[in-house]
Structures are given as structure tokens and as C-alpha cells.
Image (cartoon, rainbow, N blue to C red; front, top):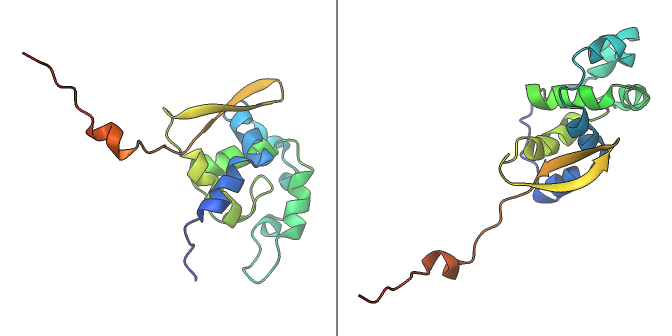
Length: 141
């Protein structure tokens, strides 16, 4: 078994703009009964957990047509599931999305409306310039 690598910065930046992740943020915890309506209920579970040497194309095609794709992806990101296809994403894509998903909740910015609701996505922390941290105020006594 190979060890999963940490997502690269460009992969995280790409995940931040991914419409599937934006949809997952908008559908997070809105519908707890999503599992009963998933397309995956009518297919063999092994389809969604292909061997490392097999392409996940069949599972991705099924997921793309599913109405609960956002809730499914939100669940996988909350649970930290790194195996199989969830919400039309591969494990590699979800590792990059997980970095955004687990971002600092105090540091958010408004991204774009999704299905009539506003979605807040975490933004990376910005470093202060060194001179800003070293500034002191001198008070004459």
C-alpha cells in the first residue's frame, strides 16, 4: 500500500474554486436523509471502490448524475474518508479539498452564491509583514 501524499499548493488552490466543493459547502448538514436517494444505492458498492489499478470512471459517471452529490461529498469530507469515490471526487481530489474544508473557521471570505444561498469558504491565512509585528508605540512620560 502506498502512502497518500500531502496536496500541493496549486491543488489546494484549484480545490478552493471547485464547484463540487462549493456545492458541498452549501449542502452541508441540510439533508441527513441523502443516503436513501443516492444513485449508488442501485449499484454494486465495489463500483465506487475500484482497485488502485482500475480507473474510477464508472463511479464518477454515476456520481455526476446524482442529485445528492453535494451532501455526499460533504459527508466524506466531514468523515475524512480517503477511499473510494464520494460526491464525484477521487481520493486525491478530496485530499486537496479537505485542506480547504478544515480551514480556519474564523478566517473566511464570501465566494459565490450557490443555489440561492451564500457560501463561505475558508481562505488561507495571510502573513503580516515583519515590520508590522515589530512595531512598538513609544509613550513619552
